[in-house]
Image (cartoon, rainbow, N blue to C red; front, side, top):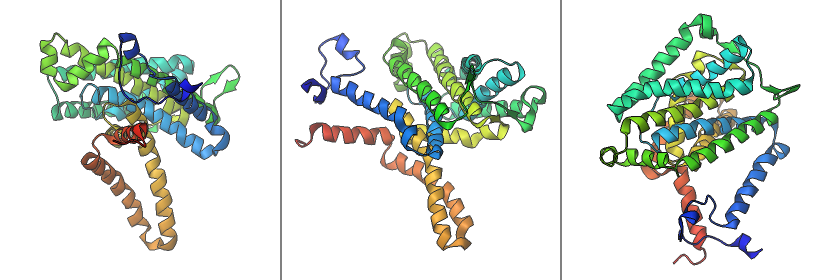
Amino acid sequence: MRNLFVRECGNYKTSYKDDMKLFGTKSEIVKWLFLFIILLTLPLYVSNYWVGLLTLCAISAIGAIGLNILTGFTGQISIGVGAFLGVGGYTTAILTTTYGLSFWVSLPLAGIVTALVGGLFGIPSLRLKGLYLAIATLAAQVIITFIISRWDSVTGGTAGMVLSRPSIGSYSFMSNASYYYLSIIILILTVIYSVNLLRTRVGRAFLAVRDRDIAAQIMGINLFYYKVLAFIISSFFVGIAGALLAHYTMIVSPELYNIHVSIQYLAMVLIGGLGSILGSILGAIFITLLPVGLTSIVDLLTAYMPNLYQLFSAFKEFVFGLAIILFLIFEPGGLAHIWHNIKNYFRVWPFSY
């Protein structure tokens, strides 16, 4: 029983088997089980409105993890996440609405189609890096949104398409709580896959490409293969997130996948922490809930100063940009680094020396 409350005080491993363990101590397993129970019971003691917000956080976290695999772990900048979300959303919309396929079939197919599109736009990454690669992914954003909005016979053009919630037999995921559980399960599977990916040969190759691509090539790492593979894996998860979001909102339309969405997902990764799975989740929660908190503050202020409503509404956009700048200046490691600092403090507390 005492082993359940043992705290890890160092990172000492005596075998490869110990080094490959996901959980260092039994107390760590208990903590994750406790967190899992909290996630499962949240809909029981929070309002339906907050369940809906948490569902959006879970879906955003899936897409942010996908982007972080590309940007944080492989060092490839992408500003076309919004378009790839659109590919996933429109793929599942076309497959379920036009061809009558089940959601459970269209969901993985949406990820696969998005992965193929992402791999196609990832081909220039062999010759391009930094700002030039960012411009190439921006071109992907423009091209994909143009096709979505102009291909009326397939995508419905600017009118978009209407979807339905997924179902199993006679049971439909119409309630926010049921869709929350669906999103959380897929998020957990995404986290498990991503954490294990980084412990494999592929994950270590991603890190080598990010840190020193020329040195990695000299060591025998195929840069073209791993850069395109990073685009494929990243786009797969972004496509899954796009499909989940499409069935949650039950509508897809070109304006839902504009450049502003791409900037939001990039902000999730930057504020959460580059190269961190936990940071992707924390950044997704922060960016998703930030407009909600700012709206509450604006409503409170306009109750006393109604003439300044337009000024306060514009203030929300200002705070969004200011948050990114402040994190880049004062905490480049993001929310994940702050959390690790807190953990490290209490790990040795009260013996801080």
